[in-house]
Image (cartoon, rainbow, N blue to C red):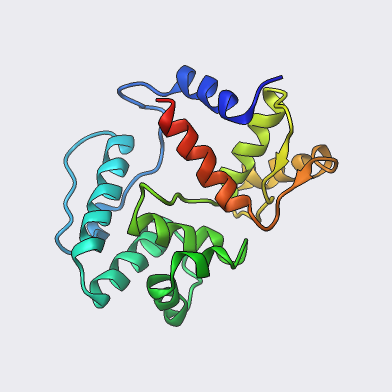
Length: 194
């Protein structure tokens, strides 16, 4: 049995390399925010470049620009088209602690907004991330399993996996209030151990 961070490191060492051709999240180049251009490259490299450029544009942008970047990352990049304009504004202006206090309510959107602000301190958390973290704990027989919230998804693979996870994780420790901060601490540990 191993800690979760070791399971993630083991998985990453097997699958992450200089090219990362396995990564599949195409960016719609036609809908990039004004002033953001991406170099030619594979989808992994372009997504890293996009985060860096969004972060830089966020730091130098006015309120309208920040709202545009938030909307882009949630709506166009993330494919979440159900947020009202006032919700996007809230995700743009609310302090990180206010958004984190929402727990799972809107997390697939507000975590993207936080990531667009600063990908060094915040990360996307959605149904795929949750399913991955929970599945890695099963695959690697992790010590002290922590259940990350099983989130609804439109993805059929994740839906099917979530059904199985619900039956396999019923005795796990739940960290409903602090799961996002636990996730960020885990990512920080991984970054320190690179």
